[in-house]
Length: 222
Image 1 (cartoon, helix red, strand yellow):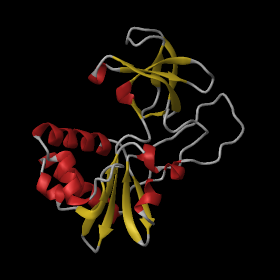
Image 2: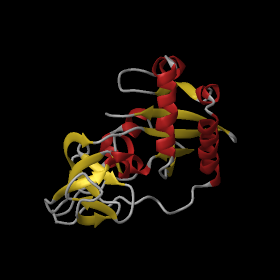
Image 3: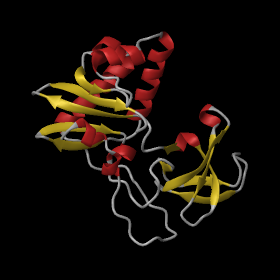
Image 4: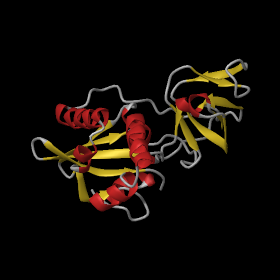
């Protein structure tokens, strides 16, 4: 399967049934990863924990896609992530976020592939606009009337796919909030650390031979 096809957002969408007031759900996979796929993930986790940039770069191939602006391969990796210390710190922060969520095992052209996070890799439910969708990455997450932990709870949702109302995010860091809309039309606020867009950063690793692996893509957006 080509990288372009793998990256296609069409792969995220499935046919929607008749509209209901129930929010679509995108739950994380519960099954264990195959050993060969788990080994790739574990190796990447080790590299990230050690902040070993050269070890990560060694898994970048000429065909590795790093942006939708034409950045590919080791040269693209260097331009995006090694241009200064701030960019490299951001690289590790993003990879930690990606690896904090479960991923999915696939077979592509007979090769074992690891795709993460699941909010991108699994078939996308419902008929929501993927560019406005926000996946709740937890159970019984509070939707509040205002962007405040003391505000009344409008409802609670588990792994629901909601719609972002606007770009405004109240607060910063772990205290940031996003205004979202439920399928019923009800609106409220959720802490942004408990939300993730399907087109945020995602990663794909492919097995090379018995022990090696390569980075297929590490991108955000469309």
